[in-house]
Image (cartoon, rainbow, N blue to C red; front, side, top):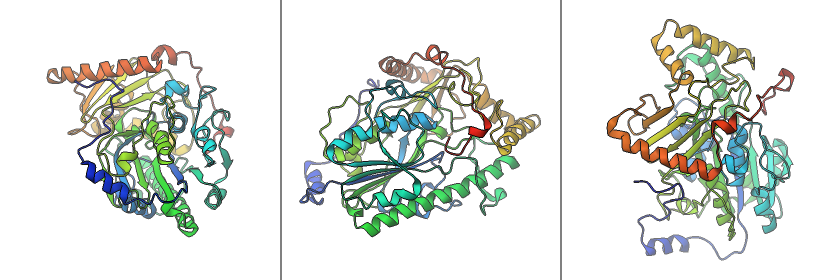
Length: 459
């Protein structure tokens, strides 16, 4: 039986001697405080980088990071939408505890975030470009534009620089990728409009990678690279039926960390980490003895090779009301090492969003959805994939070892009844601890409206 959501594996099977040798290799003689760079991609799926196995998209700088640091193969956001994901990342708290569980929502006044913790330690704490967080009293960053981000590296004081790119969020630009030659994830149908959108998405990933390269180059030129923890992460999956879900395609994210002398180059880890763990990791990395009541726990031991495991359980939450064209359709999830349990709290409803209903974001999105529905009339595979996202049961259970894309719902398998019951109980306990009232809470959120002239890339 699994223990409660508070149980974390932070040990590992290594000797005291190995740990001592690891620390001896570090340069602790200097009192110089380490710098931090957190670079966030926008709607960048796990499988869409070279170092994660994609042989088509060009990501030399992301791949460079992986070769010089550690690649996490099981890192997770808490929610597959921008404001919720970023609020959890910056506060170390799950969505319902920090107050921002809906997109375009407000974090609860009085909540502490990254600047509150690091500024008193003498850090310059800067957020470059995309925000999608509010209010500023909760997030008192120094806000700068993307073109000003690199200059922060030249700061005299230690710095924590968050670079939040708009890439590869849609609407997408044009590139030289040939739509017919691109790999598509199995959860999407093979239709021209999706291939065209994927080609633009790949071009924007390449633009993202170039932005990362500029920051890496400036860091090298500054001479501060050896004293800087650099983390790259996507905030959640692509906006076509990965975003706005609790499926792995939405919650499972790329995350790579580099810290010369502290992180062994070219390593990978299966340790499960959540976005709420990033803030406490930063605090431990800079030597803070914070006793804050956070949901996250530091994974510095994983970064430094002192631990091979971190979490037993990963939780996810989605509040559908609060996104553009979103009707009430709350979703919650919990996964362990192998099995994933999803609860749809309004299965009679529909998981509507900007792509599917009532709002013309771009012609490509409108055409994409219409083309998918049209093909589903005559193509059984397109119909199956459409039904998967639009007609979901109250409960879903997946064996991620044999079914990583979550196609085969095992909720009625009698041999897995105990597994389902255990995960369901864990989810109940987590929701209770978080003050999450499920559908009742979502019904209190007004329907979100957005006028076309306000629809810009940063949203």
